[in-house]
Image 1 (cartoon, rainbow, N blue to C red):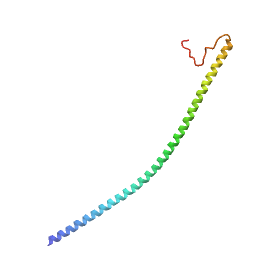
Image 2: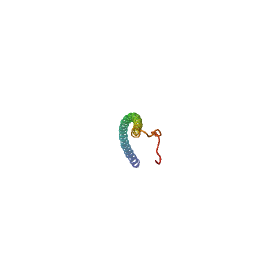
Image 3: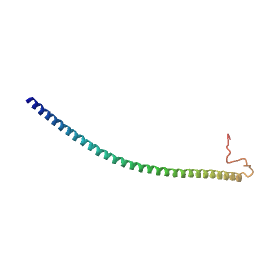
Length: 122
C-alpha cells in the first residue's frame, strides 16, 4: 500500500510539474505570438506608408515624363527653326557673295554658280 501511495504521489508531482511546464510554455508562446502580432501591425503600417510614397513617386515620374515630352517637343521645334534660319542665312550669304562678285567682275558669267553645287578637285 505504501508503494501505491508513493506512486500516486509521484504521479501527482509529475503531472503537476507537467502542468506547470505546459503553462510556462503556453505563456511563452502567447507572449511570442503577441510580439509577432505587434510586429505584424508595425510592418503593415510601414507597408502602407511605403505604398503612399510609391504612389507619390509614380505621380512625380508621370509629371516629369510629361515635362520631358514638352521640353523635347520644344527642343525639336527650336532645332527645326535653327536649321531653317541657318539654311536661309547661308542662301542669303551666297546670293550676297554672287552680287558682290558681279559688282567686282561685271563682265563675268556667274550663271553656273548654285547654292547646292559642290566643287570637286577645283
